[in-house]
Structures are given as C-alpha cells and as structure tokens.
Length: 578
Picture 1 (cartoon, rainbow, N blue to C red):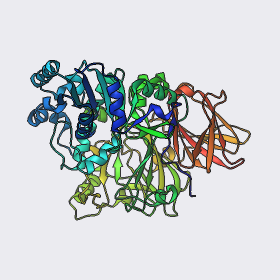
Picture 2: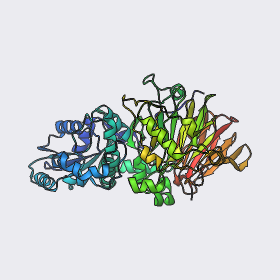
Picture 3: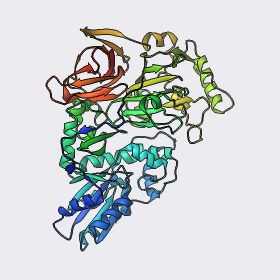
Picture 4: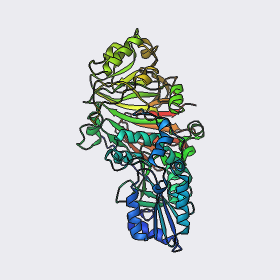
C-alpha cells in the first residue's frame, strides 16, 4: 500500500527559530559578540569528515584573525600513522579491530607543543580549526564543535571529497576509507566528543556544505533531554545495492535514480541523523549524540550498564522485490567477534516479512546430512569463478509470506531470497557479516564483493539442520496476553539471542510500558497509529506504515491507537531481555 512515510521526521525542541543561527554571517556575528579582547582564540573542533577548508575560509573572512592554525599541522607523518595503527586495522578489505586510540595519538608531541606555544605568543586573534583543534588550544576564548552525521561522511568518501584522518587518500576506494573510519577515526573522535561537547560554547551543523547552522551548547543539551522524554524517529537514509529492489521506491516515493534501493537504515543511531526543530529551522545532528549524552534516559540503566555507549537494537529494511538474493552469509559467534575484532557482542538477528511476492523465500540453516568438508570444497571452487555454488544443495530454502518471522542467531547460515521486503531486527555490531557466496555478482563499483570463507566456515553451526531450523527458527509465535480489541504474541527471538520481540494486533488502544528499558517498534500493518502518553507527558506522536520509532526508557507508560478508528493494525516491538 502507498504510505505517507515521513523521510524527514524532526523533534520540536520547544525553542524558537532565533535559537538556530543560519549562514556564516549570523554565525560570525554571534562569535564576535562573545569576544571581549582583540587577542581572542577561537577553536573549531571538527568531527572527521567536516570540510575544514570551508570553515577556515569563511570564518577568516569575517573574524580576520592574525593567525590561522590547522590541527593537521601537528599530525604525525603518514608513515608514522600507518606504523602505529595498521596492525590493528589489519590488511583485510572489510574487517579490523576496534581501536582504543584517542585523537591525541594522531599528533606528533613536539609539533603539537610547538603549535600551542605559537598560539600563546600570537599578537592578535587566532583561529584554530580541525580534528584535535581543542587539544592544541585547550584554553580558547570560544570553543565550537563542528559535527556531522556518518551517512554524509560516507557520501563524501564515495565522491572523493574527503580522505581519512591524517592521510592524503582522497582517491582511495570508498570501502577502504569507510573501514579505516569505522575502526579508528570515528572511535577516536567520539571519545574526544564526549569530553568537548560538555564544555563547548556552540555546536555547528556542518552536514550541508555552504549552509552551516549553529546553536548554543546549552540549547543543544536541552534539546537532547527533551528528545528522550518522548517517542522519536531518526532520519532514514536509503542506499542501492547489487541485489536491491523496487518496493521502497514505490511505497516511500523515492527518486527514480538510482536503479534500485537495497537498504533503508531507519534505526541505526551510529549512522542516522536526528533533526531538531527550531520553528521552521532544522538542525541536523548525529543520532549517536543521544546515545553519548543521554544514555540512561534513552536506553535505561540496565541496558547502558551492559552495552555502554552502543545502542544495541537495530531496525533496517532490506528490499529484494524485483531484485535478487542477498549474499549467503553467517554472523560471528560472540567469542569469535570478541577475540578477533574486539567487539563484546555479536549480530544476532531476525527477518520479519513486511511484504512478500508469491515466490519469496528465505535460506536458513544447513540441510540435514550436509558434509562440512564437501560444502567448503564447493564454496572454494565457486570462489575461483568457474562454478556456481549450489546453494539449495546445502541450505534450506523456506517459502516466505507476509508477517512471517525468521530467527537468525549468530552462527546460522542464512540469506533473504528475492521478492521479499524484510524488516531486519538485530543487535548492532554493524558490519560483521561473513559472506560465503554472492551468486557470482559484482558490486556496484564493478568489483567482486569481498568474501570471507575462512571466517565464515569457522562460525557455521552445522548442527542447525533442517529439522532444528524449522523447530527453532521459523514463526516461533506464542500467544501472550490480550484485551478488548487487541492481542499480544511473542515472536522470538531465539533463546540464544538477547533481543525480545512482541507483536501486537489491534483495532483499539494498546497499553505499553517501557519499564525502564528502551523499546524499538515498527508499524507492520495499518496506515497509521497515534502514540500517546496517559499522563500527557509528551504530545501525541503519529506513526505511519513501515516507520520505525524509538520509545526511550524514560517515557514509561504509553499507548498506541489506530489513526483510523477500527482499522486493523500491528506493531512489532523489540527490547533487550533482562
């Protein structure tokens, strides 16, 4: 059904438009108003990916400092950075180990000290710009944090507008730049952000080149606090893929280009944005900032204690309608992901079918009687390029229909087949998928997609055969509770997974309660619902078909009611098990 899917959801912060400054003239005027001496030091700390040259040029024109300093002037040489970080990054094209480095580790100590001294001796105003600028000028007159979302960073990587921190690698493959940013640059930057966003004067939205926006830090923190006391939606983004389909284009009114849309990321805070509304103005900030600065109110004490600043639940959409099969894959076991990649938990997941064509299917589990050595030999032969791996000889191909729910604990062989619209509900270690076979396809860049047979074969749980898969992983629906006009079903996940899912079918109001832990929901049936607070603690919140929304732990009791009285509706709700 066509929907009114909102691609630009925002949170009304309660502040007026005047609280959000737009354009370099307004921003510079505000900064000038805070300068009480000609010997000012303006520090602009930048998240990796911000176009520093634009910031320096525009602020220099308006503030006219006597000295402009770029943090990169004190970075170690590329040779040194490679020597320090390459071992933990590894030579694998996709995977490395999560780095525990800080931005300070990118600096040459002697060069950093020299720049700090130069700033202290400067006659007149000084502008310091770049990632790590606050470490060079720790006692600035005004500290501004220039932030941006990782989706925009990825787009800049793909179009060769940015490289990695400290490297001159603009023309490197986008996948190479993403890997280094994921395992190193962003980890280090987030650690510095946690320190600086609590003490800076302003936050700068640098997501759109030439269109900066700035708000005061206290306004920013108050806006985040308001956000975690009500249901919220993140800003979704859509990306093509070699197996992508057409369902989302038709239902979500997406552009005619590119050729397909494979993914919709609509609840991955580390990747998505949050739009803050100031009257008619919209200020974009990484949704991860909610996780960093309001973790307990957002996730609850128990979840925060367990996962730290990782939001543990991920909802995204996988579209293979008029497309192709996903790659045959497996996710690492917890011990394996911890010992090899430094992650403390793994990607248990499930496929919930939002929609399905008549030939839809899911490949799940190994067939009974499969010999691991024979399957390995066929996989390796297929990698040589002269042989199509016979998937159905080794994996169970299970017919799929709308509202089916397939559970996929780590270590389970799986992939979604064509003609499926999947709501993927999973834990969130992000990129740890071991592809075993990709149907002989090339990626959108015209290159073979990376296959990880050695990793994958070490994680397949061969005992999860045909009988076990059907008994344990397919439509494990059990009735829970019910009332007038509604009923609840437990749909999983598997006992081996830490995420619990509940489906509610309803034509009347359903009562929910976070009970101190974050809820993530998607409207899987019905045109729209209204989420309300019995205590009127937040304004009524409308949700439309296929939209994912988060109910922070702090919300407590809430209700969901069909927007159209009597319309049959259904939500799928996920939370972390106690």
